[in-house]
Image 1 (cartoon, rainbow, N blue to C red):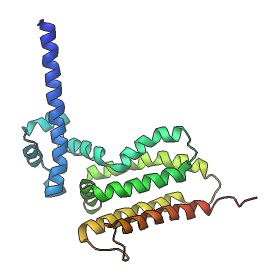
Image 2: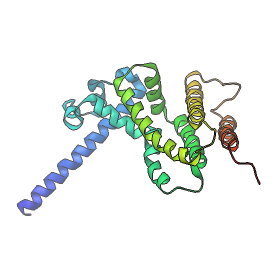
Image 3: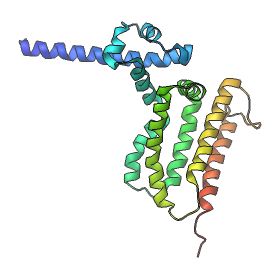
Image 4: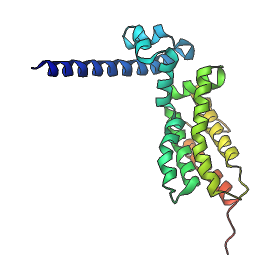
Length: 221
């Protein structure tokens, strides 16, 4: 084996080891968050969970906040969904903003219902003042602006405050899921942990969007 081949093999091995270690650290953020809550997200706890030297957090991510931010961006449904929406908007699909919103909200409901790590992140976001979570929220708002810019063109001249409608629906999804997860009880006699209860909420999301959009449609001929 030549020196060049040995150097390449060594480099690839170091790169793979770094990627594996970074993956361990990112995954460990979720495990610590689930077991100890956001107050347990310390360098000591995360490095211990990952089984690596704590110095590697600084070496690979710079700061603890950067590591946590990397984890959250990988888990945040809205960030990933809005990023994927760029291509969708560019193609101006026939289903329009209503079809996109319906799919987005229903998928978010199902994802949030089963994603306990994301539930912890949201609880952290709304219960504790955090510069990191504030930055994440602001970035999410910037990404959401892509969708609303698309919807504004479609609904131009029509009296529909789509931002308010979406705000109420998103807040409702967050509340009913967190309520079910933390209290194991119903909301307005609906148990979202059952297929029947979940389907009722899904149907109502579709209905609310339908009512909102139908209210500003031009009357037939």
